[in-house]
Length: 398
Image (cartoon, rainbow, N blue to C red; front, side):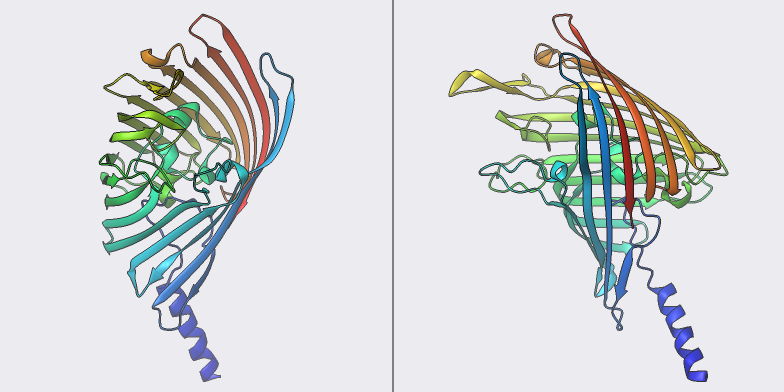
């Protein structure tokens, strides 16, 4: 009996001491639980595994097109993390398998299964230093996991102006406290070419910096890393942040994303965010912009009729929601996107309005989402298009 009691006590101590819930500021994945974890008997190795998937069905009605139905696995991902040798030396890997994540396989290009592959050194609780491929410290909605969204997708401005993932070094100085003024500083030096790019070496790098301020202290359960007040904050919480990136000699239309340009361009991105939560009410607002000091349009030197362009312009997003005590959340979002003067004849200005209802079963880890979305596209010649869709989505993960 004494032996059994001793073994039980030892197991309890080990589980408390070696918590498998790896939290890193560069990897703000939302998680309700702690996945499935294994720690070696000598505590020199930890391995944790999680998965998540999003299944959706959509009815689409676009101006000038036949009505359509779409059903797909929007996201299917596996994540592995842990440490080797010492909890100060960590790793994280995230793989994607859904067709929309991987993208179309093109001759001469790499397959995009790898989303994150990064190693960390965490010398103190205030510092994270990383090397590898992961999200840059950019706009709030992109930094947040897609699993932590209130609606079924990010905004049109995030789709066009985000800086997304890249390969390089990151340095995060974290100073978050429960009920007093808090702040974080984040920086990155990266290739500027995006994820899974090889064989395109050049002398251009991307430099990114970000500051986050929490006037009333940190959010409960890392609440800046998921949308909506599913925790129902007992005290008002506010986050304001600003980020800037200069991507020198970028090769793609959106810096780290999009098709290749015919000439390299230096791009400057500004991203401002605010988030507020209190007793089930949540509000978010953001501003994003991209500029280039050169002409945004690039011409194919072998075919002067063919061109491609940097997506320059700016956009604002406004989002409000209320989560009831029975965990039904009602969400409204409005986005304004204005394209830059150089490309006004190439692509329209857009206004987007979305309404959604989400039922949280286990917070963001298991939820049912419905959304209706309206897009109004206004072209340079004065013509307009009105598009809309109705969508149902189920998200589940560990």
